[in-house]
Image 1: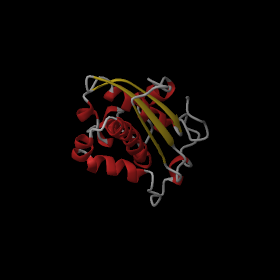
Image 2 (image 1 turned 90 degrees about the vertical axis):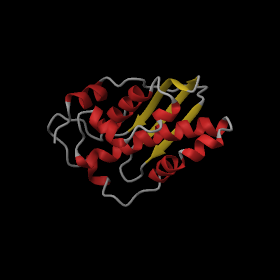
Image 3 (image 1 turned 60 degrees about the horizontal axis):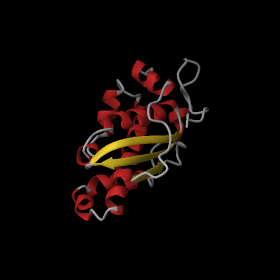
Image 4 (image 1 turned 135 degrees about the vertical axis):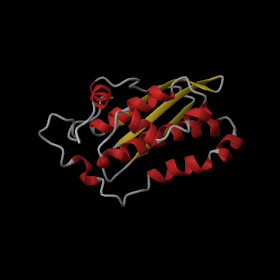
Length: 170
């Protein structure tokens, strides 16, 4: 499966790349099996994501996913943003090859961890408790190594599509 035009657009011209030095929330996730590392930074105003930025080291799909996550989350209530799913991201990108779906997991997980970090820093234990299953999923994403994700980047060569040999634009 080739990447969609939307994936290629978000890979070639990613939105919201960078770091927010005094972020209200920060989430970082990495998958040692495939080498992708994603960081999300959020600022919050009136319980909405006022700004969100990312830094990603990984394949083209990982960069596109990170970009799309920030676009979909910006301006949303925290309670709505944390509900953005890997399927929502993949659908918004026009689909992802099956071996790249884990990238959408990592993207949503990094954002969820940034929101959870904000809630924790601000003593909002009730918010953490009411979304604990999503936060736990995100935390476990760092620990999953059983899938054959190492091969996710090794077979897509020579067709003009992005590969894992290039570091992300950060």
